[in-house]
View (cartoon, rainbow, N blue to C red):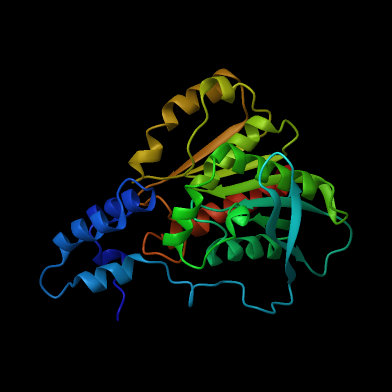
Length: 295
């Protein structure tokens, strides 16, 4: 079945999918509302197929890429879920120790997209750790729908402890120079913000369209921030003005970018919300920021 391109999908459908992806409506209600847009030659099946992620053809770092090594490891998270599985990726052909980056998934566990982001980060010269916060429940189940359902069963503050423990693991890793940053997407964007709140020695944080901390928590941030937002992401962007005010009031080093015409999830190249121009520029800025702050 041919998938529709981004330009063939109504913005209201993107907004509807956002509600579904963030558990505001269940699958039955999503399908029911989506059916309204199945008119003419546009079938409900084609709409559903087009909105679901494509993990088969979108991987940017192919298996066996000689620029990195990538293996699953387990690390301890005593305040979180116990033993947590993560994908550890390291660049090859480098001499000496390199900086570290924790890569934080969305609200559905360590899916193939986030694994690929972890590998991309390694290719760019960092040792990356992409944890799976679903490990205590058996790990990412193979589909995002099931992953979202599973992740709702875990407390988000307990999951935050899992990612803080990932930072601790990387800082002590023999191949790491002791400088560690974090990049996260959606739920991972909130985690990235909160790691900046909780870890005064965090070298840098790059939240992509992440929920913002309170003004009280913002005052605790010592890390430099780069914040990435999609211009069409009304839900997340509503919290940005207050966050910006708190960052300025507390003299927190930060820079923010809003990519006009881009939706929530614009970096995720497995769904039609992907905006290639915005995603490419945002990632270039992210890597440049890490190279500056983690050297």
